Length: 235
Image (cartoon, rainbow, N blue to C red):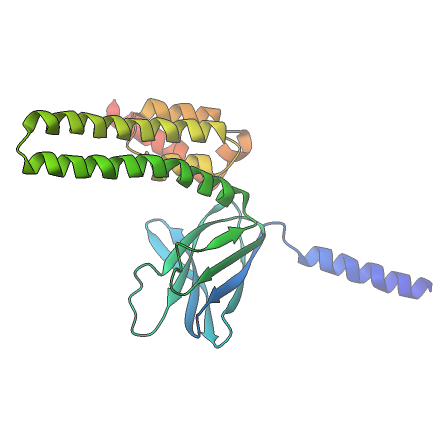
């Protein structure tokens, strides 16, 4: 009895030692996919690099594991012979733990359901917020085109002012969203990817609002470096 207890204890220790707290397990299914490749990628500098590749032949389920030291954006790319890669790459916020991604062959990026990532949940919340600005801008573009066809200069000028106001609103909404979610790695990422050309005072305000953990993250450090470079160039 004592020997069995020692064996079980040793096995539990081995299992716990084998786990890495920074390991991500991403799995899911691509409905409708019969044959092709699913590639896990991440950004390195300005290039996407392949982390792992899974060949699909009949069973469209997939799984990958990866050490994620700091939550960041990863990508799943679907590669099918003789087909363009356009619209066949979806992004998701990778972080340690279990993440599931279920999608379809025909709507690989637009119908993806991603669960298990807290940053991804916030990212989708942000995208929903931004949709109103995107829709508003599209409406204004249509109005501007009509005004151009009518040679209505005064109307064109008025619409352009509205478009500028919409862009300003989108920037401020992004800044506010980042500040309100300053304990997520998504916050500095949004400043670097969505409003990188905003006035440095806004970037600085968001950075100063970040929690110590987020300041020490990959995107937190990148935002700090970016702000330093901007300030140097302005002096």
